[in-house]
Length: 120
Image (cartoon, rainbow, N blue to C red; front, side, top):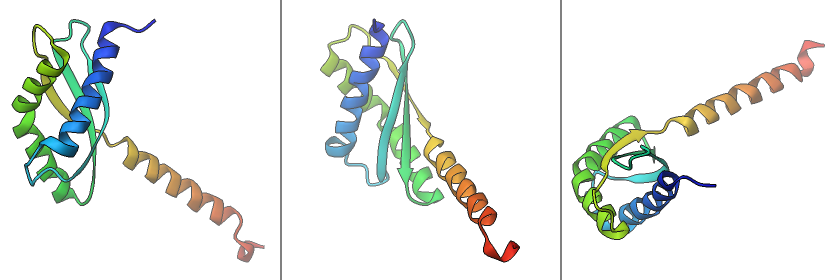
């Protein structure tokens, strides 16, 4: 059984993803993907996790653009979901994809070193 906060979080993820894709005109927001949303049980705060494809500068620009758009996004979310109180929106950079890529690269490197024929 899902808690209401999980259903609302899922709906917010869809809405925000769509807004970023079609509704936000801020040129600072680059290739941003919404990776998840966590809601407080009382639905007062939404932690929105995102990733960015690009350089460190692209990440900082996108972060500034998202922070700037948080009020607009909050209003849109409240309107779409018909919530009595709009949740506070906080954006958090999700570095799990970068960590996974680093781990994968390290494992591949270890595997290549263990199969190196020059060691024989």
